[in-house]
Length: 408
Image (cartoon, rainbow, N blue to C red; front, side, top):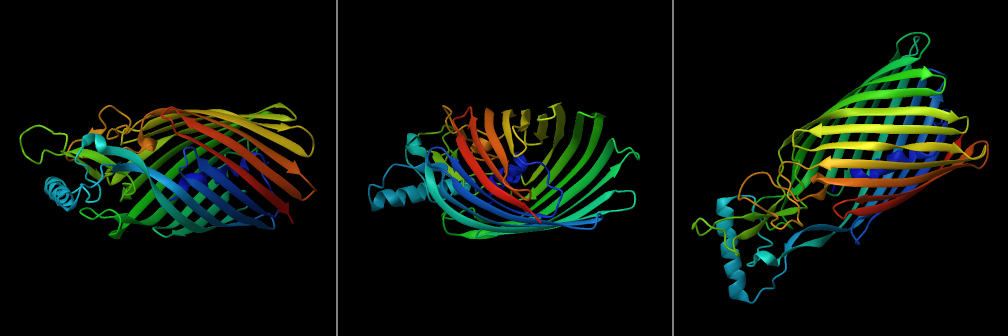
């Protein structure tokens, strides 16, 4: 399964450290845990940056990540009473599959109340790598191109990206950026009409993104960045590890009985168009204190929209110690085809898009973090971060990061 969330968190390790301009190597480890004995992840990234004069810079990263734990999904709880019961369940499942291809074999429960969200074990490893090359021309415009790849047991990804940064004038108080990226992914998905656990087939995914940004220096102590971004995804966008409940009138009497609810696949549209706005400010309150407020707007054609508001501070306690506390508030409106698994009626109709993935639901969240950067020597810096995240739907997680950067 794709583990973009933990990796995105690890990517924020730029957290407590100032931007490193000199040649350097770094290593960071993140430990991520969801409350309730769910997902646990251990992510590791080794990176290097090398400058060739003042015109060329090459950066490269290698990553190794592991995920284990349990993923929550609907499943049956009523035990089989015998061979006859198993045959009857199989017969009714086949009847439901004739009405919709979304129904899966493993998991029919003859009692509506017998379905419960249960943990299903998962264990996976991911290997990743990326490289970016930046060139600065005579006008000091920056041209960056890069490639990246990752491999998991059931997920593969290859991508490329490019960006150009140029200044409005020689004073360099204003700059513009244009960038884009493409990902060509493949995932092994459980197939319809299968027994859910065995038959898999590779499915393609494409992700494209574009962004345009403006950076403006207003005063010696204040500057801000404004970024418009958009994205397009196509291919297999459902999550085959997740399930939903569908009501299917298999006896054709016009009503849904307690034995006419079936386990079905998470089913989403095969395209997704998204976009939004990202605003970040940097204000030096004091020579030792920098405030970094941020606002982000996101929306897509699935009905999801969100607002993120918060910020971080860089507090230079001493010449060798910097602290970076942060807080973010997040509010999301759920997808049009989402239904809360904890709702009084969590079932869907026989056909149509359907998901009970909490990440596509409506909720409010709070994230708290504290980073630290310790300058051990003139060339060695240690970084650390601890964070806690909670959603109004009951989801909670925490993570910590430890790392080191050495200039050479």
